[in-house]
Image (tube, rainbow, N blue to C red):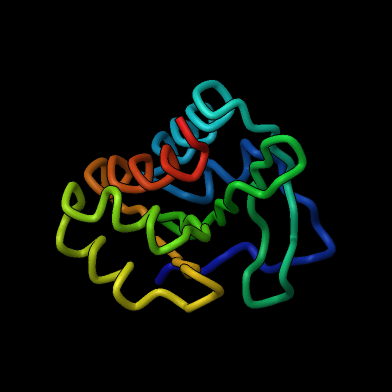
Length: 137
């Protein structure tokens, strides 16, 4: 249903990734532009973690990874790591399904990783809230 772009031999353009996201393609574009403009990130198309993850857009701020945005068929998934304190700082502002994703995070140090699938404007708003904490503004 939410297949990723897994052909490692063919490097997609950002436009091809946007088209692959289907109906949420405009939200994919909106998030990538927002990260570049508001969070001052530099982006690159990457195939970072092997065949299971596929192609995505890596956003870095001063060489530090902010997040990866993976194109999917009719969706996209944002992968990011926050500390428990960062998650806690916005937890009460988020939707129930977003809180469930945080509660199920993959633990790492004093926080953890989440994979957050964006399929609607409401979910985009929540991931922007989390990314604002990550980008520290």
